[in-house]
Image (cartoon, rainbow, N blue to C red):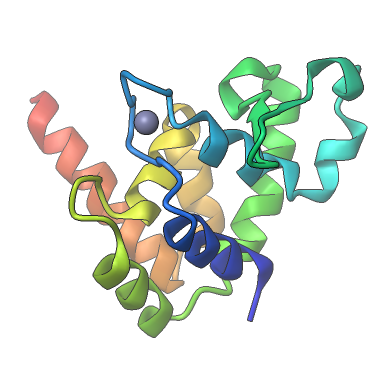
Length: 145
Ligand SMILES: [Zn+2]
């Protein structure tokens, strides 16, 4: 089992907020802790100064959107490797246990990287996570026409 799947299960179990654009907390626990798990996190310039965590021991800063384009690409590349390991049964499980008051957690994860959805999709073609992301992209495009 890859770390990403374990992390997503943990977030749901710990009742972290992962709501897209949450107006109360910005889902910063989920968003910042997610990228803190990546190997490339440690090589982000000045990361010690940017990092913040709360009394629940979750990182709350920085998030993907706070970082420069070069770092964002590194994050996409590393996370795509982990996303490509997700099996369909795991994706289904995450949908089933996601909190009713929030969107499914995988949708919230892809939403975080939506400035680079097409690039991320190109790294995930042919995987269950890729199929999931493609549906989101198609849905988004159909609403924009
Ligand atoms: Zn929230």
